[in-house]
Image (tube, rainbow over all chains, first blue to last red; front, side, top):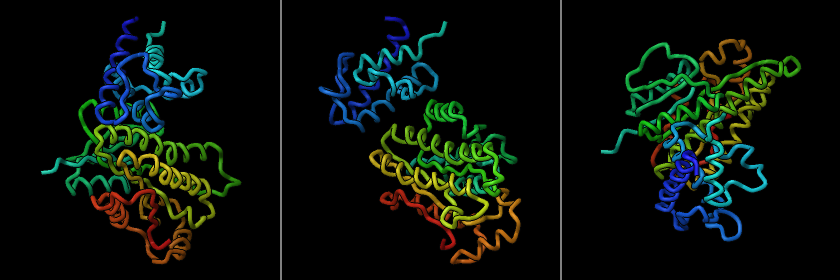
Length: 99
Length: 234
């Protein structure tokens, strides 16, 4: 796992901790955790809350303003919000240093 | 003792925005403001950001800075706005884009970022947007301005529902003409004709606007959201 991906994973785990501290339905601290769809652990409003927290944690850790819900993310065939692992991969790809 | 309440006002360099900054500093708020330029006069208790409300990256950076410093936000007042009077047949597309960029897109951007910040500590907050009597009065010559503010009304009513689970109320005040730069170029007879259509026939004053905002900000107004209050009985 690249340095950026590991940092993104830590940001998402921190976001999960914050989310779980205030919600009844908690998100497992695992990249295997399914967020949306069959077996998903959040409802639509929960996903909104979670993404807002994730963006905040990523902004804090990477010290840049990010938006994880651009048209690219919303139009991808496999949603980057389907699981914790997919979200980590998506954030890492968004923040990877450009050659 | 309750902590100092914080407020962000857009378009604070002059006019209504400047008045509101002075008024709410006077009422004990810590006030942040923004505009494309620097304010003419400094104001104790007020901090200015040079931000174009239509620039998404700049707006996000403003909120990132507030959060990075540990500042929370209790109130957002979306005052920044521009008007353009012209017959539709003589209105350039550039004007339409400019008016919508400031009045609609700017309001949207600040509401979105403010709601994210307000929801962070689960204390909620209050958002007040600016509508105009030009919309319900269907003023000829103000089609683009009125249409942009009609969009703000819709944003206000729908965001009120979407933000309610986060403890954030969203309302709007719809002023009549007030003597500011915004209407400086409007002929007097136009203003007189507009005032004649109000139930209470006088120019609006700055205190009329802050009075409605005060109502939206009252602690007891936490059950008031999605409302647009027009002044002057329009």
